[in-house]
Image (cartoon, rainbow, N blue to C red; front, side, top):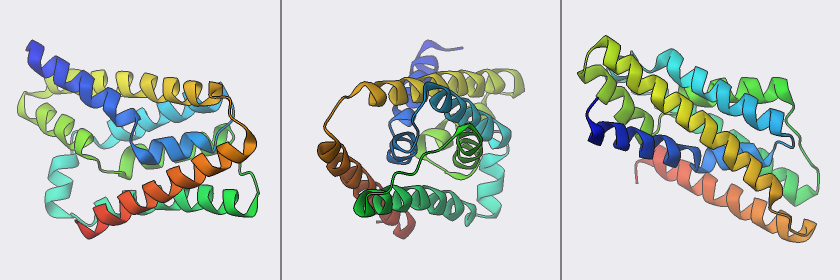
Length: 180
């Protein structure tokens, strides 16, 4: 595997974990186990569609909207919960489901680049690229959740941070949907 492609895939996997919809979902979770299940299931969701992704999107580009709407839904839940003062907690089963949904349907530039790279180099090396991306992004998502749990801020400040994260994510996704 050429070193430059290896480095690009690592960088994409790490940056992928910091995308707004992942941060929002992690803010709805409370335990390390939930972070791990979300990260792993997100990787499984992506892996389940990674190879045919380029072909499917060339035939049905509307599928990207499903992923955007899922991320938008999580953002609205976080925003609503903070505004009304109700805490929504995602347990393991919700972490598993949300991870698979976001992994499979949220089409992001990092996933598209990895899918294109994988489709250009043949099955064995392509699978290697996808596995590398899945492992690194899953671990990084877990680490982001773990770090978020250790940011010890007052409840009022946490509420403000969550509202800001939700609003930024909603704007980000709406701009993505509108292609602005």
